[in-house]
Image 1: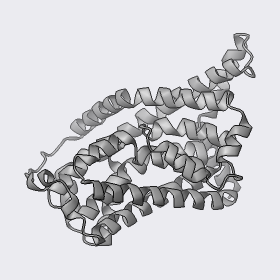
Image 2: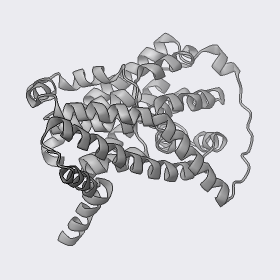
Image 3: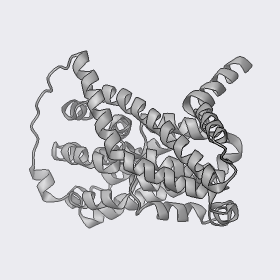
Image 4: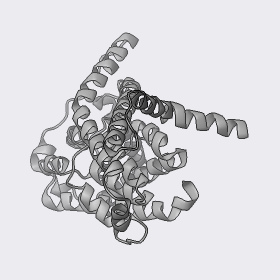
Length: 337
């Protein structure tokens, strides 16, 4: 058992977490005569290390996920979802969201397509909630930063929010609050041509390059903010706002995250720095969920498809779910960290 723990610890710290890379960069800076305890030099080390680490993980994960995604074009996804009913359909839609693009804005066109194709509204909303909040990439990257238990629980809780949220919307019969042009579009059920293995590998490569170009600015901004928090913001500030002594820390972090726009790869460096400074685990995870699921640009896009009442219900369900998950993580923190 100890051997298994040691092997997994090595995988988590040296392969996923790339601690060796941080040591290598630190030793390189010391060799240049630079003091890594200096705030400016420490910020540079944090920035270079996190950018390289996240970029390597990002490209690898997008390539693998895009290859998997090539087996689930919209037409096939619609057929898969159409075979299920009730909460089973919501669960499948939430799981299907884990193999889709990373940001909320990328998921909305698929949501519109599924809705116009006649899939139940609650099912499409389960997909819409799950897609940006939970994906295979987030599982691996969260494992590299927060550990296996936290990563698995994050994914489970995210899927629960997606299933419950879609189910509530379905039970409230909100179809009349979808913009009329969405329902009148109709769907063209076209079978996707069979792709060869070479085609799928080429598709995965193109998706990797395209997605990387889109998210690189958010990675740089996110890591830059993380470096500033890590080296310049006093620990007592973070603890007073987001630590255990502030019972409203989770709510504050969620509300701060909502207006922002980034994907999980841009928010993790900020969450990592906040946790290092003394913020509670559930608080930083609520911040991440708020940013990835309820960003202002994605809500503006969603408003084109959903009328105000449906949009408000979606925001309320996600916000309440994220806050509850945050407090639950805070309660579990002594047992999982």
